[in-house]
Length: 191
Image 1: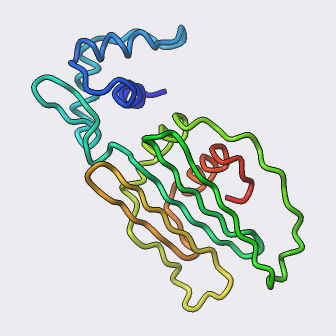
Image 2 (image 1 turned 135 degrees about the vertical axis):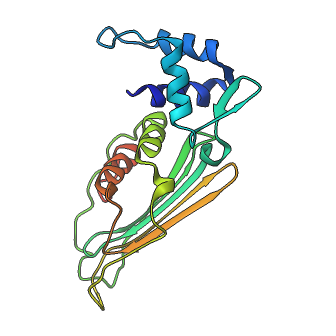
């Protein structure tokens, strides 16, 4: 785990902290494989990642624009059920919904068993590392009319902003990693 990810997890769990307390918390989470670091490295990480962190009166917190509240994801692919996940980061819960079209020639696809739902904290860390808020607003394939393509949208809400991204047969560069994270969280094989 990168230092900035560790700092985000600590601030998300404990709220705003002064630099020394943040350093103490981060260093207490070190594994034996990781080398020690000093207070200066924590400060440098926070100053380098200005878009993630907010400093006020020597207290460090997650920037309000990145303090994740909710995530809504929808995806519809030919030959698969349409999927939707509504994730509430504040309550640590999610709702997963799947639709099958009765008129679809694919309706005879057997239902696949769901896996065990994953860890919300791991998924939240994935959203941070993928920087979903930096995705373009629209991803549209440059191939004219597409009749059987994949359509999707993502709406990410923070305390102060709403980030929207959608597409049709074109995706952000790290879409596969995002899909894998959704599969792990929801236990659904259809992402």
